[in-house]
Length: 532
Image (cartoon, rainbow, N blue to C red; front, side):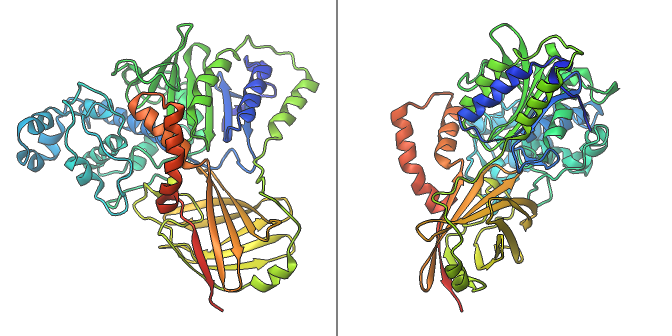
């Protein structure tokens, strides 16, 4: 466990600037789960918005790619892999023989360096069905759009190919390979990593680590491969990882940015260089080598425009000369400020308990009809899984003095129960959905219009889920909502993938179209029928 100090100024972190940063995030209604500020290897301060906790792993999305790149680095150093290896002749000669013209020419040139630098030349769809498809075959079947090495395109499947190659050469999954090389030396519990149908780690997504775990890896990376005086990976590999293998990229959300080996390199206005691991929905590790400092964030936020550039408005400005003097009163006040942060459900129109209706619906089985993706979690979490859940069904409401207990089933899952506080407090449940264990902190409330609203904070996950139940004599209407919603995610994808800023009029089109997609696919509503 990283050492905690009593007051940020002791290691040269200005608590006033940190407070201003957190105030900025909250004013902009940024959904932050955890932040940690580390300097000289010590935690200067941390803030975990309740019910989030420091030790609970968080889904990392594309931040997983940076860990995959480290695995490739170990394999290169040990002589297992060579960056000059041509992928098709070695691993897919039969596929190569079936190609012709430019497609064959490009396939013959593709090497491991191109894959790790995101310069493959293939462009895949983010909507590929990972449940039904063969991840490797789908990638190989995708045609080359440009000659490898001549352009850059951010494709998650590139990192999956790296994971496939590593397992092909070692017989170990990425997780197994990294455990003695990275996780154990940094005292990180062996994490979960989503896999494909052949038990190959996803590579480009699906890794779960806590904010502290991310911090340890970032400290090691920033210190050129050294952690607590011990060499973990070579300085040469870190230098390769932060070498700009692209031209300047997408200065939409971040400062002047380049891309190395699955790692972003930001150049600040004063000439300072910052390394960054980044994943969708606000998973970030900012590394400031000139200040021996790391800033880590986990979140449920897809508006990078209010995270990346604004973070650089507060850091490195927050780094100051350390002082041993401690103002005990200020230290306690700052600690209370950090400990006061919390996600609140903000129910639509809460009212007191509806005991009469609870008696009518309590313990009655409800059969549900809906599209496949109706679930107690969001499609953004499970759409890249090899096994889809969904098909929410077999609901039963049981009301106690202070809580609601909702039992249900989902596709491929046994009976599950969510406990939700009805007294203004969270109740915690552990759900087994697909291959994952979910930490679900929930509250529930009756609304003035007679609907029952369930607020599901999936701790360590990317979105908050709301289920609103409207009860009739024989039916139950189920309305499903997520936060953050999909229109801002669609806007982000368009801007990131094309390097352009979406104008307001175009964003209005997105906001009009997304609800149709949302209800037809990502976040459908449902109708239930009392079965007894």
